[in-house]
Every structure is written in C-alpha cells, then in structure tokens.
Image (cartoon, rainbow, N blue to C red; front, side, top):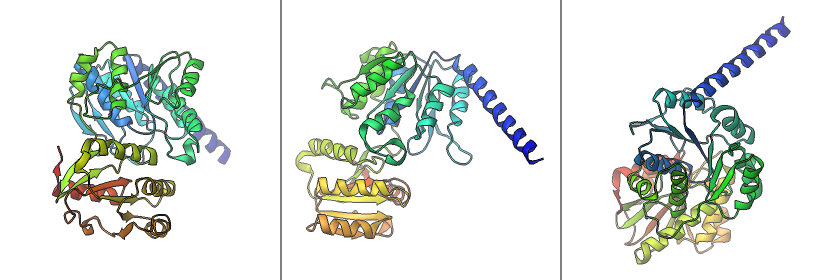
Length: 375
C-alpha cells in the first residue's frame, strides 16, 4: 500500500510539472521577448531601468523584480507588491508569465530569483525560456551555493544564459568566461561599457547595461534615457538622507564587500568636501555568517572613525574590530531607536551596510520617518 501511495504521489507530481510546463510555454509564446536579469548586485535596478527605457519606446512591458520586497509593474506602469503564500518558489515565475500574457505584454522583464545552479537553470530553460539574458556583475556573495571564487560564481550565473539568444553584461573582469558560456549556447555576447556621459541618476554601469538592452530591442538611446530618468526605484535602493547635521546613506541592500566599497568610493567623489567623519553602521543577520565576515573586510578597507553594530554577531565583530582597528570606536545597539543618528557633528556620514532583514529594516524605517531626502 505504501509503495502504491508513493507511486501515485510521484505521478501527481510529474503531472503537475507537465501542466505547469504547458502553461509556461503557452504564455511564453505570446511574448515577443523575455529579458531575464541575473547577477550579484543591481538586478532589481537594472530590471527597472530596462522596463522604463522600453516603455518609453512604446513597448507594452510587464516587469517583476525580487529585490528586497518582490514587486510587479504592469503594462500600464502601475507598481504593486507581489503577495506570496509561504516561501519564495521559482514556480511563481509561471504565474508571472501568465499575468504578462493576460495583459498582452510584448516584453517581460524579470529578475532571477534563484541562487542554486539547478534552480537557475530550471527557471531559464524550463519556465521562462528568455531570449535576452543579462548578468549585471560577478561578485562574492552566497559562497555556500554560488561558489567561493569569481570564476565559479560566473559559472553559476551562466545557468540563465539563453540558448540561441543574446547575453549582456557590464562585468569586464569575467567577460571572457561569460562570453565562452554564451557561445557554447549559440548566443551573442555584448559587453556594455560606460561611455562616460551617462546621467548620474544611477551607477554608470547599470545605465549603460540597460541602454544596451533597450537599443538591441529597437529603442533609441535618447528615448530610452528619457524614460529611465523617471524610472521607479526599488523601495530599498541606495538612498541618502539628511539626519541632524549629518548625511545618512542607506546601503543595507548592498550586501557584498566589493560592491559596498565601490558605493563608498562613488559617494566620496559625489560628496567631495561635504563628506566628513565616517561612521559605519553594520546590520548583521544571524543566518548570514559569511556576510558578517564580508562586513569585517569592509570595516578594514574603509577604516571608519566609528563602527556601530546592530543585529547579530555583535560580540564577534567587536572582538575582531578591536584587534584589526584598535583606534576605531565600536558601539553596539539593541534597537535602531537607540542610535544617536541626530547627534552627530556637521558633515558626519552615517554609512549603513550589511543586511536589510531585521535590524536593517527597522533602522531604515526610522530614517525615513525622521530624515529628509538628501538632494
């Protein structure tokens, strides 16, 4: 009896997969293009930039980002949160295909939501069948599932490269490796390089990458840029606020050390002499030990005057910081409300990094309530 039950369950599971596959294929057939955006950092932003550029070109676009909170932008440009029942599952991409098809979308721009190589491959080749692939960049993060070196991470991200389509990337360091993977699948390869005259509403790499995709799909650079200038930003994207006499930088969604340091270098150029004392606010997660170690690397590289700790692993980080940065003042806080954000000296930069989940989200909620957008 047990064997029969197991057999029946297996048959029902296979039937479910077959039905989902048919639904996905049926919906996919109505779409002219599917743009599948993968990479370590900037996926949500690049999705939104592409969506805005294509929409400005007159295309009917449906967009779905995973980001910090999953969101959809329908063909009319209306944005709304994606309601999930239970944990995230790549099967929700089938529903997104269905919604895009129901709205007579011409293009679906969708962010990769999988980490494991096999799930990335399944999402691309069994569900979405995107003809346009995007890998924003290749950086260290999620080493346990993505790989512990940049080449390994590039190989993992390559699971979403289309067959017989085109792959775009802005990552010059891993370009040759990604190009080889694309050519093995019969896809064109495009390395998008910043020209130096990109607007400053986002990182030049993100803008140049989104522009390359839009131009390849028939939208002129001028038209795409006009649309991107008013793109819908991710709710928790990089943002600056005035807090007291200082400047608060929300970079908690920038999780890896390399990207965090790149953000800081870019901010230093933009702020110039306005940037004074640096206070690094590190928000850690209990289930992201590798990121805690990454944030220690950030502390060492940026050498802030002070480090304020929130979330998990505070004792661990304090001990390490006292050892590697003996002149750095380290403070721990149980609640975001306890941080003296408004009591800093003029020009102080409060640079919040690490993780949004938990302590980070509460901190940003407070800053949004008390601070003012920094223009």
